[in-house]
Length: 265
Image (tube, rainbow, N blue to C red):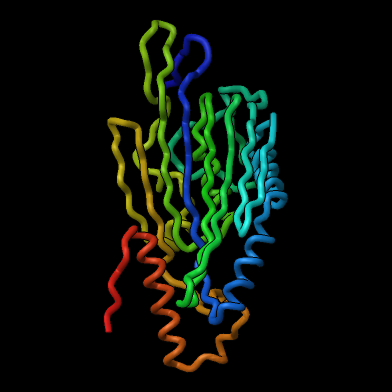
């Protein structure tokens, strides 16, 4: 793709936001309360600040300010204003392909932001617990935050992911012509690694004329032993094993499709 010669700075705003869901089964109220407490401690505001600070370091951004907050009874938020570090635009790859993993990830940001909010919760009686993290990376400049997608999803293991990417505003070339997009994109999926695509079922809803892209991801299969909080797989009978597996699959599909699914007796 031929590079644009711009008049002044690139004024396009590129926003990547996604929800990451992690599902767990906790048999008793005490176990459900224990799961919520565990998640709340693992992803408190201090821990989230460390994660986002590392992300900023990896993508080549400088932190301007940090706002963080823990909530009662659970949950936390962290927002960082960030600015770009100097990167030669000639060294930036804007082609549509999976972004690099943590060891070599860079980005081009200017007075932009990265934020995360967490929402741990549990079913009042059904044994199900969910942890949701909302993450947003907004950048101004020549590179899309989609280049950070592989790192962020690999960093936070998940069962369901919903991703939105949008390019807003316009920038002018040296002849005064407005440009509403400065890089090629047909699907968010094209920025994901092959192992990630192999693990998930995916669905796109894209509005190309509005520069809006949406992808949903659902894990294809799982090992039940990784979804039991303070319980052991070998302690479950065959019927209980099947019941919990079906319960988890139903919960995942309801989140993926965004609607409640009637139980079949």
